[in-house]
Length: 165
Image (tube, rainbow, N blue to C red; front, side, top):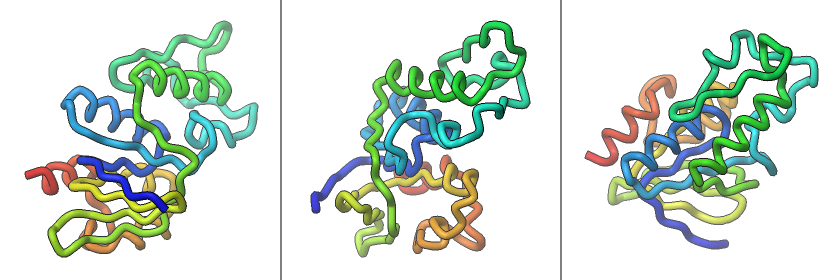
């Protein structure tokens, strides 16, 4: 198993993870995004073909890149959203590592964080986990000892600010 070091680690390569990556790149921080999926597109690649966004593309964009209108559709379908997310990841050259499953996150004695994955160990100063909660992966949140207080409802931005301060 390999060891990796990065300033900020983002767990999950869906919409929230890609948006976090966009802002981390703009801030010129060293970061990595770990995604359990084998391909870009977040959870959208696993939904029914008939599923659509509940809002028009103009209101569903990620930072820095407008989601293009799907020809002939008011509400984009899953294939359109998946293609948009794949394009977004490529356009901003986001450092997404996949497939990588995070098994545990721990605090180290020096105040850093350690993520144990199926492909090695990641050492980081800050962690973004918000997308785990959004995906309903409560088991993943409970494994994050030392990074969350209470019920694990702390925003990714707050974790990053605290760890980098």
